[in-house]
Image (cartoon, rainbow, N blue to C red; front, side, top):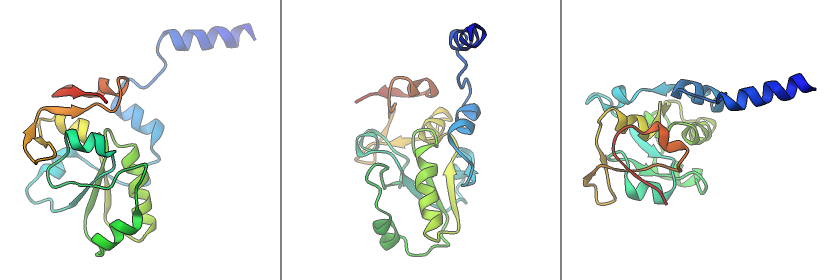
Length: 163
């Protein structure tokens, strides 16, 4: 028992946690939805419906241009199906880093959508790669909602905003 407690203490002291984005996503995601990189999404030839799986308070601060807010806590699959009825269209779902978006993308896949992707690293990775984000009026902004203090470590560019 002493050895177990010592090991537990040792792991907590040395921060046995995810130190990289790939480690974090591996822990929380099951890769049921293929990733698309921010670079690929930013390419002019990538024609996709972009869905934001964050909350309105996050979306209102900043989002990827032309993204539609679908939310996470109050996601309504029926509303998405009514708006995007072609289930073969390319759909990219994103959130802060790619965890909530996988959950929403899985629901779309179960509903019959055949071309659904999860944005690797989410809006944080998008901004970290200097791609533009816009505010509610579609004006470019440097502000980015950081979700919470602990997740803000994944943002290296922009002006962090918290609720």
